Length: 319
Ligand code: CIZ
Ligand code: SF4
Image (cartoon, rainbow, N blue to C red; front, side):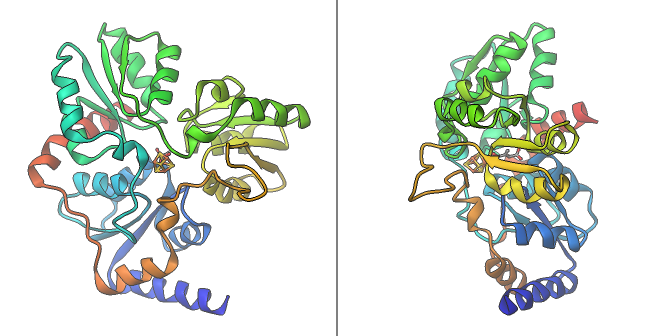
């Protein structure tokens, strides 16, 4: 514990010395979320992380999250230095949607408006008309559908089919999934609900349809935290990365949170609902990158220029 405190103090000092600001996702270790908050940085979902980083005057942003979040920060602020605790922290959605295959898919369907989720590489965003996050994807697709547009959606098939059902839009779906949310199980969730009839169920739409069907609230991380805070209930079952519980407990003190069951919930694996790539962010590697200025994110400037259009469309829509 003494070691941890020393490490945190060192990080705070380095952030000041380097004139850097820490931006952390809800799914990373609670210590990093606390540090971001205490040092004037930001803890949030990927949409808010991107906006905060763009608008903050610091010349260096340290992004505690996964690679696409660092890339998005770089695309929005090419003049800033973006560092990440571990450059190998990726995402199964990003990995499952290689730019060359995706580009060929788009070429085969030129009549469709290309909408991609934030969890993609810079090169995939460069091929898209729109980038969306889970907090705003539904509204943007509804807007495009109202204009009579047909949509090509990538990469998350669960989020895509959820949005398709809600909006009635014509959507062609790439078949990607999040390795964390894909593990939530409807049958087990139904049993857990029966054990806790008073509980409200909060589900992120990257989860399978039979899990989403059992939800009281379906939403992005920020929307789920708001629901936990404002809903008139004291017990919640939560189907998203369990890193979010840190913020939920702080936002809704006195309330009780239960992790939704995953395939791996067993005697050997009590909490499988945690992203292995988010978990690569820690105090030690954060301190190291601040000390050395290592692990800088680079995006090809031409790719960045093409990708920023899809992101700016979303930000303008959100404004
Ligand atoms: O699952 C993720 O990586 C999420 C929810 C990212 C985000 O949009 O904040
Ligand atoms: Fe990707 Fe899922 Fe990890 Fe989010 S939780 S970064 S969607 S693998």
